[in-house]
Image: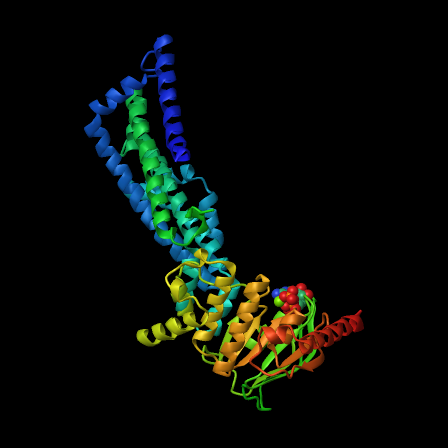
Length: 260
Length: 258
Ligand SMILES: Nc1ncnc2c1ncn2[C@@H]1O[C@H](COP(=O)(O)OP(=O)(O)OP(=O)(O)O)[C@@H](O)[C@H]1O
Ligand SMILES: [Mg+2]
């Protein structure tokens, strides 16, 4: 009980303290808003520009969500394919790694040349997000208890049964870990691509608003948009953590509170 | 008393196993398992007992020699039950789902499977835990679930790899008794791997003593005490004498290799 209070109370306290310090620094040093706006002004801007920002947030969230879903399908699908066929794994896994290690900031401008802007943003979100799903799912599929595998073999399980009844359930914790990472990353991918698109003067997402406000020296709006992005990131993280909890609460050590 | 005829249901001839690492686990192992008998493989740790059992089950191929199943060697849940040294349960499935796995895999009829699962759980005394998850069970209970799963299909041959090794003495004695009662009731063949002299004498009709690695049969000891065996047998002079005899055979096997 007290642990719970501390867990929730302490971060909120730190946040409140941070806001107070921020406000004081701005106020005492008389820092002008185009250098560093105070928390009050950022909040006021958030309210004033709400309809514009909310629209942009929706655009970014939609891209993030689409990128995430495609990353989940692509990552899990490829991992299953690689698990079933060694030839496919040997042929394509290196290129998945290449996609992963090439910085998306460097790929985004290229994609924007060849693809319409929304598609390019989506592809960027996908590229950053799919690899953790692929890597974690692969790890999960390969760490199935070998005695359980032998047992399924003895009982004459088919390949499909091995996959559905043994490998995928056993890999579920790792798959969910991959998805949790992918959620945050697809937001980052979308933002990076929007910024790149923003420098080309096109787009309507939240990151584009940040870039645009930067050019116009509308610093309070930059902060307001940034705040929304952080909140979106946190919300995605908690939503996926809750999904993990729901899926694993009956059996996996990671989410079970052991009664001692 | 379970009927033992002299017809071997499984025979291993001159079986050897060399792992890729170069470890020779088995060399020249000859073993006959007769239908309906309770036979134990006894030997020091690392002598190749698990390897031998896996070869019998077809989970691992012998490097040399031959394994022959009198009934043909395509395995199925009716043919063979295997109890691993660890419980080997699916943590995401309930106890009932774990025990019902062999039926699910062959798409058996739901009602038939449920009845078999219930009976198997009843036998190991875990009916009340059918809907629990493995993590909610103690180590001994998990092992009993694993045994229930192997028994649910009432396989012709039951292979058990030190199933009780990790348990405390009281639980082990209880499971020993349960296993003997089941064996007498179902009249199936049991191959039981152990490194406990006391356990092997208590349970078996025949003990196969193995040499240290590379494992092969050093000698066999017949345990002719009648079943049902119970605490009276465990405390009898006959039991003590048999244990001494098997113990000596085991030391000789170990000494010869040294
Ligand atoms: N997969 C493997 N690869 C390489 N060596 C192995 C493998 N499995 C077993 N061995 C080796 O074979 C030998 C016999 O192993 P095995 O597991 O059959 O012993 P055991 O008699 O069952 O021992 P214990 O009583 O400790 O379970 C050991 O020396 C072991 O190191
Ligand atoms: Mg062993």
